[in-house]
Image (cartoon, rainbow, N blue to C red; front, side, top):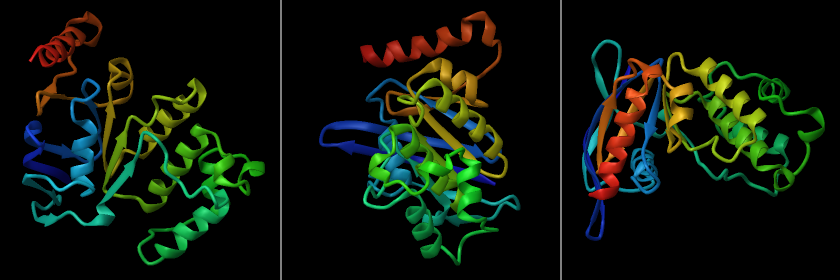
Length: 236
């Protein structure tokens, strides 16, 4: 399976944020979407999730047999940098509500406590109101919803930036374990995080996507190539 973007463009008034985004993402890989703050990473994700209407271009799923089909809502999972959860519900109520309304589309659902165990959420926290969860725990709940839904394309918008080191490492291990059979696109402005977690690095610079080959990572040449491209964008 592939997720294919062709000539996607988006402008805000006179500023063209996405110029001509054309790329093919393959299942089974974590792609690091690297770019400066303000480069358009979130704009790209919002267009792919259809929270924003693109000015031009399209995107579609290409199945393993070569057949193309339109992207439907169930194909896309989106984890925001700032978790958005219904704070008036407990963690258990939130999961039950999500599982109830998506009952027909869930594949091999587990029990709620099995999902909590999988995400390492302690028993004493499962019946707390989400408003009393830490940022990291809210982020875990947001990830858990996407694990339950099993989308074909998972968009992660800087999900680890504000987490403590233990939770961030748990999330990285989780993402590595879940990458088979789906396309994971991980947005970040932290180069070392992208190099540590991702199979492929894609640079968003001056409104376009460019693959940066992860060849000789220890030489410093790879990092310098990325930094040079980001400096070029800053000076543009």
